[in-house]
Image (cartoon, rainbow, N blue to C red; front, top):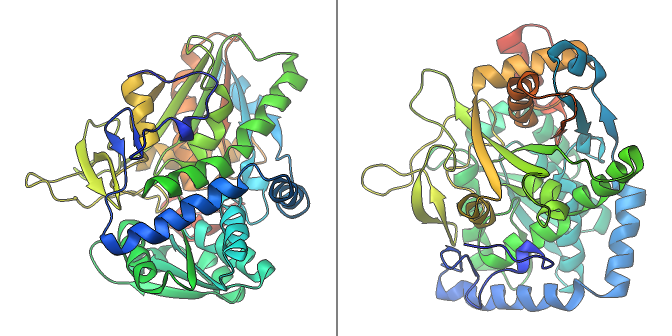
Length: 411
């Protein structure tokens, strides 16, 4: 299973939307085929339109704040020894996370489709917060579907969503988390697609949503590539890019400019949620060898029970507890271009504690999983290796969870 060089990975699918012949696709009801076709045509019409790109880039600069910082974590580097550790501070983006890029694209498409309402899903609350922000900016009505368990866990982001004028639709079905929120959001869109635009919050779902999300978050690696050349004069010869992976949107954005590099020069490491140390439940379909299944319109590795039904997940991070993953990450795993591991809840908490004690940054529990892997491997590497962690979210949303487990909380 090969990845073609010189072609954006989001475009390396066949006419049915499959990556590598078996991941992705459009497993949707007949009622969704036309709205998906309409959205596909709309996106393809505007993705290379000069005025569309000018507006997008203007928003990234004046509204999101580009570029987000690229910093060396000198204290962490000195403490661990070995590799040189850096962070791409995507949490600097307006709203505190990478989700803003995808939200902006969807709001722009919503306006061009002449629709006045937008709906989306959220788990950690960041995607809902970002969609509510851009909906307010663009004058759109907004509904955010969110599991009731996540509503309890992510109060700060829920408060922000409501403050921005959006409605939170509580989802009580299933595990009451992200997977159920996505399902309910899609059901709502089926009935209201003539007047409502839907944006899925990650790199999952029917093919067009994968493409729009990846196209949007690619801004992260465009910035990083320039910052690396400014810092080192070139792309380092021994570079490791470490990112947490739930659905996989921030990881795709962090890596997209580097897929064509030899993996011996640029290694891509995805870190999934391994769940509590003594639990059999996890959210790590790639690193724990789950089988292929179909969820939310796409074929991908899915966490399933013995009957082939989607299984519940468990993670301290509500942004990573999705039971499947993007079809693009499945392709990256099977092609060998990216390597996937997992970090437990305890490892993520310990990583958060160490990083915040040593550095003036405060990552959310999602990138804390990536920091856990960096902390694990850095001492085993020499100082000619550069590790970069995508700090893709700010810990403000997790303050209550962190306080419960670690006592004190410093942002």
